[in-house]
Image (cartoon, rainbow, N blue to C red; front, side):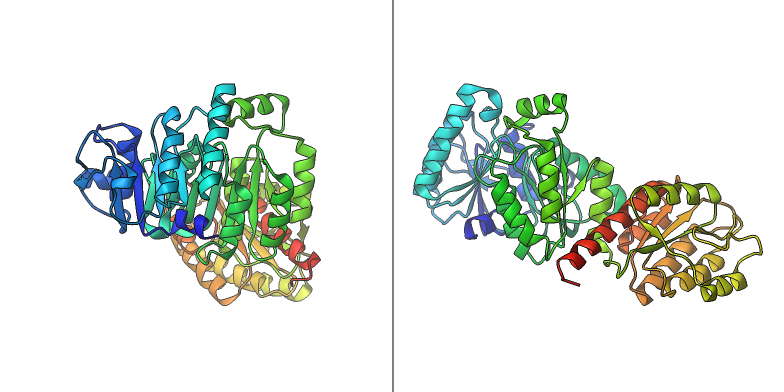
Length: 468
């Protein structure tokens, strides 16, 4: 896997097609590698890649303060990773240059290949044949690029790099990568790697799964898939990886119109959705049907412990959200734990007389931070409860920041999974505090339940495989 490793941990990077012209892809990528993000460049703060950077452009001697070279052959040192952003018909020659320079890892940003019709498909076949002569591995073409966050490497033409964290994301859509990065800042979601694989002419999902299986920074692998060129290989590798690390996938193109859109987007064939669904289930890959499910499941699986059993409790200060959460749990096949008499007795002591006395545990609308803390401590320590979904509808009596702090403190003591919805609240300090401490805080109750469902499905898989 050394060629794959060099995509994420290179000591040197060349940008073929680097440009000094503002707004050109070759200019944006070079500056992202150098500065880390568009914002850092505007501030003239160098927080990008710390290894050697080589712009390649025969028309100039200097770009962004770096010495520029006419060709890869002119660079006097070894290059471990090349980023190509030249016109389609010039790519094949650059691949030859990479082979002669013994550059084994190449990202092709350029579009206009298999997604662009027969002529593009022919060009792609030619460059792949050339790459195989030299043992060159390719990500792309027609992609946004790659990010290795712990290596400070932003080799994309996006404008931001996400915070560091435990999720590696592989996407057939480059635009989806940039959208998720923007979302991640709002939710304090951290990533270790971002890969836009575009047309998947060579390196594909299975190769990257195999690499991230051994990557110590990756705790959860998130996939956006339009098609798989080698479904059998993906299945065999995913089946091994999922035993050690959760994999969450969203597969698009499962309707007739979606299949048509997939073909025009990346030149791929979507295939039978029934077959994909069966393969994901057999391999243990958790399938998301929407982007919100992709985010929520990945956040829970990356940050929360796996429950020891299937019984969950719902803690709420409002009946309506509690009922919605219970309905969602039932529809997903989750079990609401039956509270033991001892648990009910303890809750009687801290709750008003009109609390629900059952699960969902409705501790009434005037619940304070102290009541939340006491009730949560009782529920988390109850043997009949394996995980807790906490709901809070904002009221004057509930200091949300205090409640968030107490949720974090209790989970540190009792290692059971928690998901939270402070219903309707967006970008509050209390939400950010929970997210920063690895507890998924999600806007709606149904989504908080779904995040818990992902954890229970993970537990069920590990139990079936005899791993717990």
